[in-house]
Every structure is written in structure tokens, then in C-alpha cells.
View (cartoon, rainbow, N blue to C red):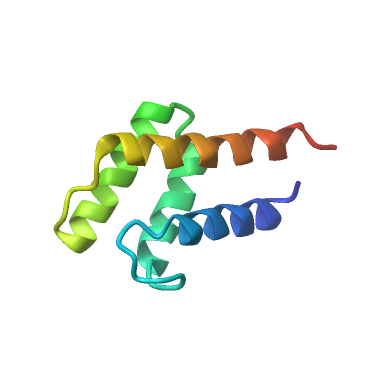
Length: 86
């Protein structure tokens, strides 16, 4: 899978998650930060904490860490599946 296709899947997954119920398209800044982190971080717990911090900074509300770890796992699975394709 090409990086662009991977990034599109990551963006769609985060938009579908919609942690604050604002609707898709309302997390552009956060999504950009998270997509970059998905490429740099390979550990679900570490990525989950990073996602939590990104949303806390933007919305001044703390998301449950377990929710952030679940989405981190999905994002890492997408990344891993993309790297296995020829």
C-alpha cells in the first residue's frame, strides 16, 4: 500500500471514531498529528498516550486512555497491514 492510501485509511478511521461527537472533518489538526505519530510510533500504549495528549491539548478534555489505546491498535493494524502488501 502506498503512503497516500495508508494515510487516507488512517484519516477515515479517526474520523469514524469521532471521540467528541463533532462529526467527520472536525479534527483536521489532530488527525495530521496522529497520522504522523502512527508512522513514528510502533507501540500501542505509547501511541494511545500520544493520541490522548493531542486531543487533551486541543479540546482541554481528557479522553479515557483505554479508548485511545483501542484506536491506536486499529491504526497500527492498518499500518501493519499496509506494510505487508506487495
